[in-house]
Image (spheres, rainbow, N blue to C red):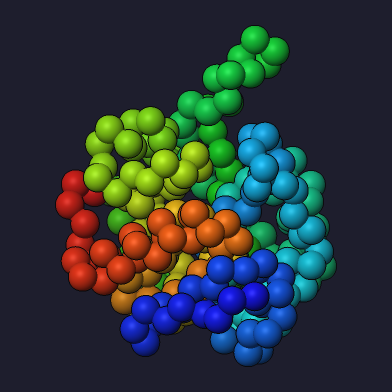
Length: 237
């Protein structure tokens, strides 16, 4: 494991295996986990299914007594694998978003094009308050949220990176605001292109990001540095 990269006082990045890093983190130091783990669906070399029992056990140690876990996944990963492991570690399913976007076109000859991805929210402790009004997601927020498919994101936003599963910052930013207190700490063990870190910088949250791929780590580091210099990115309304 390489030494951590500190970007000021509020951002710490690790180029390493997330299990190794989390084993060395202080107990009860994280207010929320916001992450999109690979789940063995896309065929990329890094896209491997995770050991959710190990992840959940480590999150149970590093998370504060009142905290929230936010994770992307398909239905099999989220409900058949992640949810049982998280519940065994003391987390309770709270609610879900369904992000609507066309993905999986290459497989459409053998199955329907999947137009959605799940985002599950789990909590530990008392019923956690919402730290920012959910109406940031709309006047009457709904559980189904339309987000930009990556090709459209590349055309519209200058921060597109080439990461095939880069998340729409317009969704991640209000998510972070709602589910982590201002000044709190968000952990993303599968940082990818760094969208969660950018959202934390823009909303006054501390960020710990872990990424095992050096190419994506460099992309994430660059994006987060740019966000620190210009807290509000253009064109994200």
